[in-house]
Length: 195
Image 1 (cartoon, one colour):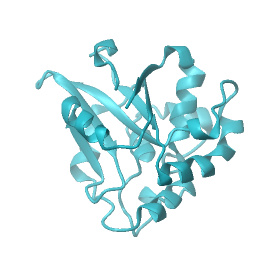
Image 2 (tube, one colour; image 1 turned 30 degrees about the vertical axis):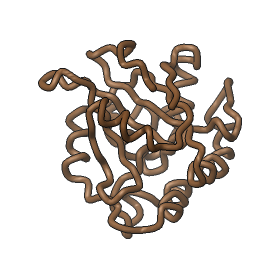
Image 3 (spheres, one colour; image 1 turned 180 degrees about the horizontal axis):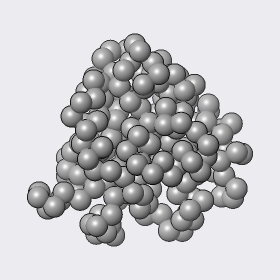
Image 4 (cartoon, helix red, strand yellow; image 1 turned 90 degrees about the vertical axis):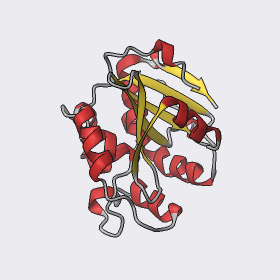
């Protein structure tokens, strides 16, 4: 897993995972067309494309790391402390995790965690296809929640990622965050972990 002792408590972080289950494989297959336009170097192979994103923020009151993420679950956005998140990841099919510093608004992260309506119900593959074809989140009335990548893009108050790639928050996919980490920091500067 991620070695949280390497994280600076004064910063927020974006993390992405490379999944290996059936839905992750579909996301990777659909996102491979984005690789050429997003990466100037270090282009990942199809099975190394990011399939989910999350964020780390230090909670000064609780004195611990909090992870914010939006999943294809009825609750939509959730936040959990690091120990709880680790337990959730043990059931996950992700094989690799990468984290890098990325300024996010903690107030916005909390806002969406508190007021996000969740996805309601629906088949996870339909939701995945909705995200891939930019029909998810705020643009998809049947599923009013935000996707993991849209959630973090909305909490990027300076729209660094959207400006870099010329895209809107609802069009952002996990591969956009992966490309941003590679392009801005370089792969050698990403904090790596595995499941």
